[in-house]
Length: 110
Image (tube, rainbow, N blue to C red; front, side, top):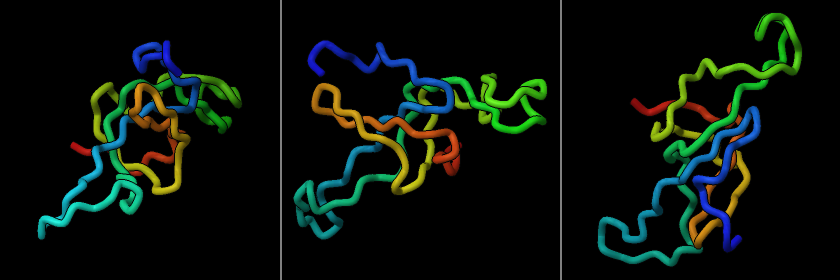
């Protein structure tokens, strides 16, 4: 996507846009690993997020499938840990970003 920038993206309700941490290319002993031989990191920085999707009767005033500010207290720049196989990759300007569902986020790093 040539004319698209990350700042133009606003995730839909229930999704978070994350920039995964950089992959360490060199091990402690100094051996350089090829990029395709390393696992993707499971943490990264929040760039943008949509509203939460309420699935239960008890949230969002009793309405199912309604949208409300998320109680996870996510902020732009927050580092989060997420599921290994969660999310969808999006490549913009040779950088791979991830769209994750809120439930794929396991922890907020303080």
